[in-house]
View 1 (spheres, rainbow, N blue to C red):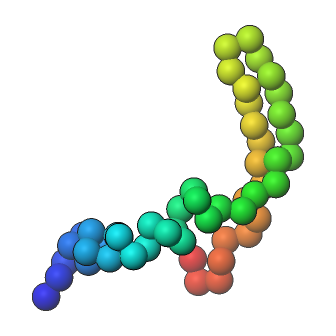
View 2: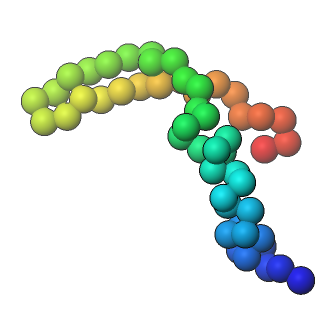
Length: 51
């Protein structure tokens, strides 16, 4: 039987297309430009049910 870690590694190639930054939906709430960096405040909404 797979451990939790092994199961995540095994299913990773199928999950990466829809799980993570490439599928994240967000709205930019505020942008503050500084000399060395840009601070972005984003709204990612509510967590999904059961999270």
